[in-house]
Length: 520
Image 1 (cartoon, rainbow, N blue to C red):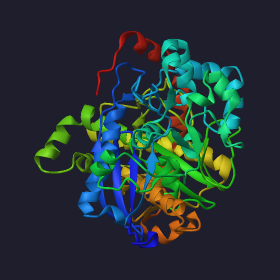
Image 2: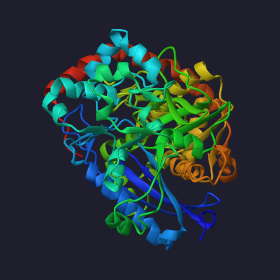
Image 3: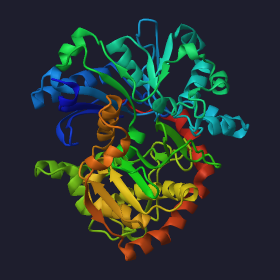
Image 4: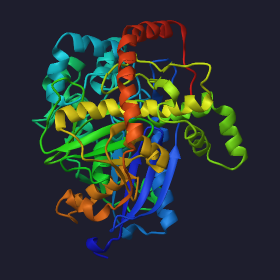
């Protein structure tokens, strides 16, 4: 069987809460999928860690699961291509043994150093060169924290790597990082496509302590026979190093032309647009990350997306969620139906969904969740709807910053778990005042990884092939009455945040002294 006849691409999408693997055919159809979840450990209020070996096992088991589901043989697989969450960091020794947990983007232990860097002017200089906003999510700041708090660990560390690098090191015994994930570390010079000397000096590391930089289309073969057997693949099956989930989501929904903006909401969320060369925000509110030559993604992430809905399910609407389970319903569908009983604006109840701090546009690790306007007339259904609207107010704030830099959006492409919900999609349409379309497949990062795999294998000439794969399904138009309601509430929402900013700092200081988060 020749390369051009191999019918399947496998996409592995390493996410924050799960790894999802897909089998995709040459027409872009998802034929099989499998998802494996893993826990997030929060041993303190500012920590968010995972077990790297649990995630590695999820990758191996997930690939094996979709190979078996589809009943395919190794010679039918063109390649395996990767998507990965950003900003993770693991210290490993010379034998690739983890010396730390996988420290995720949600970890805020380096918040003090982020504030210091913002105040002294050096932060803006590093941001302008690297495109990664100054925030404790960034490996740049996490490395600074390690240098100050765990110098012995730093001395004993062979490499500081991200989760996808860990997976490739175990499979191929090579330390590789693609330009896309590197551009999300705060350590990578966007113009030079190399590690940034000034950022490395601040972080206290050398290039030798980091992985080798490679393009997102870099191809690796010759993995361990044991892992190949576990996945149902050959040792010679090509693995494409791939890119970050964010930039691949834009590719996977076809949002890479002027005026087309991608909004993804999974555990967290993001608003992104594409430019043909590196471009940073004078105000430092937006990121700029690489995908491929002539393909750079500008946008902003929010910390609190679907995780807010999960919090509502588990902490506020526990009885309703349990009732739904007893009736054989999806709890989220039941809670959404309750929220739909309330009109836009939740009768004057606002929720700032800042449960795990916030990234764009505020970049404030100390931000906290707030219900505002609560009265005796409000019921649980109002609280549910206000929480969902709060996520959309966060998305709107990022979209406004992006519009200031890129111009107005003409269409929004929605993806991520929230895109399954017609209610959420319409809410976003009305909040942003722009038509929203949903691709036929919402597995945008996985689809993007598969397209990148085709490019890496020489099967397509450029990424415009995405238009042949991505069909647009449901479209939503703006409800003008609801749009006016949200416009009226936006200024109140923004004012509440700014008036509480100092108090967020105060309550966070109190929490750090008196509270410890249970492991989850």
